[in-house]
Image (cartoon, rainbow, N blue to C red; front, side, top):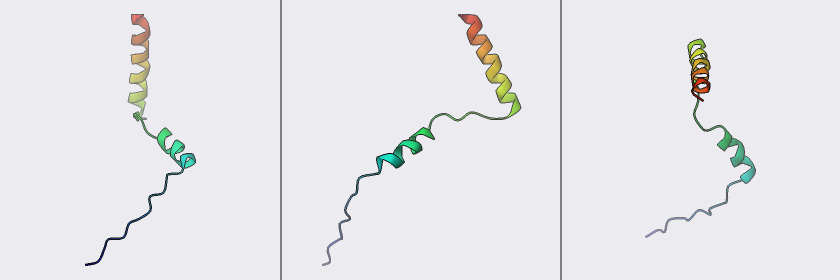
Length: 49
């Protein structure tokens, strides 16, 4: 029987990981109605305080 080849596991490049992590997170809509809704939500949030 043949044995399976084992690949060497190389550590990831920490310089390349950081920019990739910054791309994540919640994405917002970019249309006109969404920006207006965000403005209104901000006003509502500030008026509660």
